[in-house]
Length: 302
Image 1 (cartoon, rainbow, N blue to C red):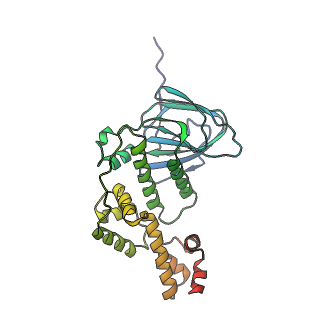
Image 2: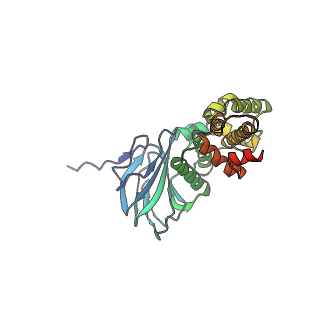
Image 3: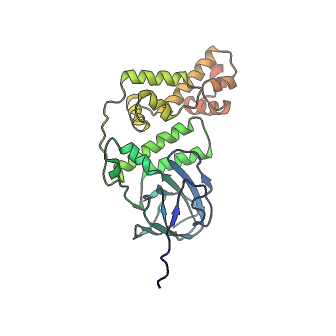
């Protein structure tokens, strides 16, 4: 009688500490509450992870480290083996339900971003048959500057919470999904939008934003005003306005704070809250970054 075949472990990043049983060390940073995506940051010693599958699409990206000279190793994807050099910024793509294992020949820092398969289907549904979307496995052998930038921005969001965080995450996951559909899928989508948002919809959207700056606005909420999906709204808004919704909202909050500083007797603390910033220190950071002065310095110059 043959012994039973070894079972393949399942990693489901919808669960807390999903990969702990297979890795030497737990993650040092992990997202919580983000819709459709999940980020984990790891620092591991030399290790080999047993064969497993993911319930979500997974992208892995190496982090730079001054003390690591060589972080090469081997990776098995869907039964295929590749020896990888794994330079900083190189990415690997492991589609959902694809068998995977790998090893590292030294201590390593890396990030893992898991995406719900439904995210690609929802974004690609207007371009291709959503049931025909197939993410192609990629070994960690070349960099992708856009994906690396998204990783680092999401990591920064985890490390320093700021106003509009959910809106930023929604924007980034949409950009990432479109990038994957264009560059890493068996069927590439063709855009069906070319003219941006109509003038009437832009007026509705910008009026709504200006009236609700004090609230934590989300991409889904604003896209509903235009009666289109958040996935297409992000692209159309930037095409029409030249900036993302997140950038536009931040600028409008700065403008409102400037107006209140000039024309009201409110304290800087209350102005920050009225303009939609988390607190006075958050408004101060945004002023310094965008205007080169603090709110107090701006007020003194009025």
